[in-house]
Length: 405
Ligand SMILES: Cc1cc2nc3c(=O)[nH]c(=O)nc-3n(C[C@H](O)[C@H](O)[C@H](O)COP(=O)(O)O)c2cc1C
Ligand code: SF4
Image (cartoon, rainbow, N blue to C red):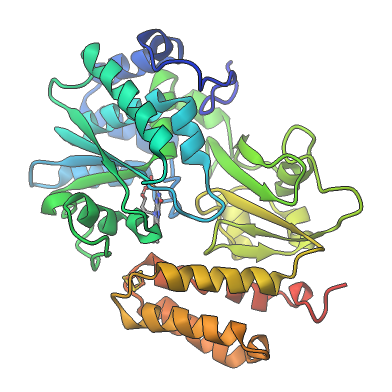
């Protein structure tokens, strides 16, 4: 049995995206197998494998595919979301640089399952090296007949804004409009890009599809846990010896990701752990005790009120005050709010003002009220999740500077 597969074991940035590589990685086999299955069988395999979306929301991939396939409108589109602007998240960049053929194979398979004739890869504007790598891979796939006949893919460059990664803002961006989110419902599966049924998936989700089809559902489910099968790319950053992108099986003890020699390698000598911010800017601060107990899978983290999000794990040692991190995050959200709706436009600014004021952290009632209003009334995920890290900190007094050692 081969080990984890999303990230190739040999670093392959110097490999061209060649046909030989496509065969060697098992992706040609994956496409051939997909061609031998009906769209319904493909959707069944993806559902049975239990792949959850890796872009942040962990939505069941098979269910999304079924909705797009069932939508009674055409044409249909498949979009790969490679916008990757979440702070502390850099896995899609590594994945596309090391192995662009995997996610593109997943896209070709997805198009067959949902009945799409056209696809778009939406790449973060700053990732010009990634764009070149994907363009090379597309050219090879076209030359060898895997694209062009029935399904074609174009690249679109991101608009340089965090919000452009939100799926409906991304559609507006491709359509040549400002990247502002749309009100949902209607959902993209029926009314997405150009108002047509659209399957939008994260890079890593699509790479999982390629691996699944080149192996089998049983193989896929051998890794991870019953409720969260497979592996996850973790973006480990901050106060660890070995920051980087690691592919781990779901269910691994969270502390192993930070401290095992093969992964994070622990903290610098003499330092102690203050907290881990799990899931990105809209993530959850965990205490060292929670970190000791948690497994890296959805149910285990949900019990702590935390989430895997996009896979970011930012580690802070005792040289950092969590309050300073929260101020930076508040500025980030205020800068990146698209300004379309009041709870987020005004709320993110009010958070900055409060947290930057001398006693801002003491006014717990006002912070909670503001946070709840933003969660309840914002149009999109940015405003709804912007207060989450702050609320998680307020629920954990041992992280407060005034009580920290
Ligand atoms: C503010 C905001 C930014 C987002 N940025 C990204 C992103 O950069 N990449 C991504 O895959 N999903 C991002 N998402 C999630 C997408 O809206 C969408 O859920 C995802 O692309 C679906 O793919 P998945 O089901 O494979 O996870 C973002 C969501 C929000 C609210
Ligand atoms: S929640 Fe924020 S980012 Fe989302 S639509 Fe409203 S203003 Fe724009």
